[in-house]
Image (tube, rainbow, N blue to C red; front, top):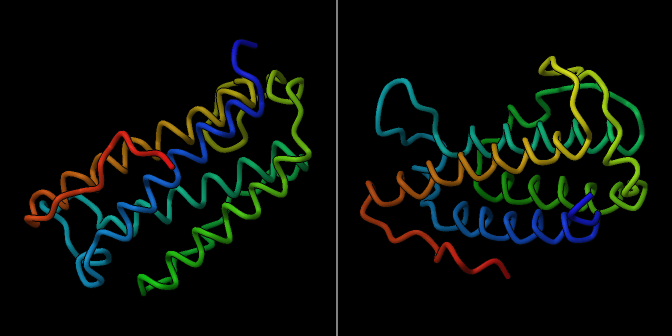
Length: 155
């Protein structure tokens, strides 16, 4: 493995801090209702997806309990969304202690999305999904006439 467990987690943490700054930059109403086109989702829905994937993968990787639930569908306020994001990340930090470098190398069929892959690849997928949706949030903010957070700041 080229990247250690701790190195990977620092990347995840830096990305999450940036994602949360994007959430915080959104006006309350637009966070849950604005889309620039009919087929797109509000940014809050993308954040709920990120949390669902993170919750399912970390529980599966750390505890071998594979269950995908839409645990955040009822959230409808910015404060509740931020609080849920903090709770999910706190749970991830706690469960991360159960993960080893060897655990990340384990290859299994993905119980949610199909093909066999390593746990590291699952974490990478979750990160790439977060980055993709965060980029959409950047675009939404710009369309709304707002300046998104600085991309290069991860602390």
